[in-house]
Image (cartoon, rainbow, N blue to C red):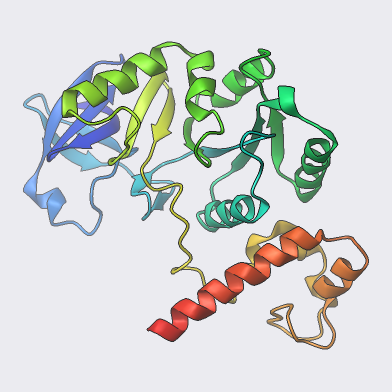
Length: 287
């Protein structure tokens, strides 16, 4: 029996990379198909010598969209400029990842274009408690730091189009471009069209997850009660709220709203909270 990690799923075949970086093409035993847990990219598994997945090892986490398992962290990439940062989108993505209880590293790329607004964003998100790094492929800045962050972890990259995610990964390890191109040639799809989650190996225990779903923002499984807990800075002030739960909207005594009025919580973060709250309420009305 051999063990490894599922790196991709193509047409019913699961590709498992073992501890010596050999990739095995495998099918799944019928008893696993009937199990309540479907096999996901990122799963640690045991495989037989005749090419069958025999056991799915316990997961530390999993997501529905994208359908992946055992992510150690998400590197959320935005650009200082070109394109400019969309704060609402950034905050929505942070909430989605917080809901999955996966550690987040915020990477502000193209820092050679940074200005005072960029510096303010770094300070803001660091004050909330996020790890923030700044990078530039053009100026070769922060690449060593990013490489260290990726070491010995399964990392999903997320972020809007055009922020330089692929360029960053190519700067970390040139073979990333080869691996993505190789998969695209095999399944005959465009090299920038991701339809299935895949893992790309940096070394025997460091993987990059390329996913089709991390840019799709959905809050259908987040409750109104859960939402405030996904803004870490709110937690410092909820004890001053009169009501529990407090939705930090119309309540007469609210520690969070007091913190906003005294500039201890940034208005853009509260605006994102209210926007997502309205999204969730609208989804509830449809069902």
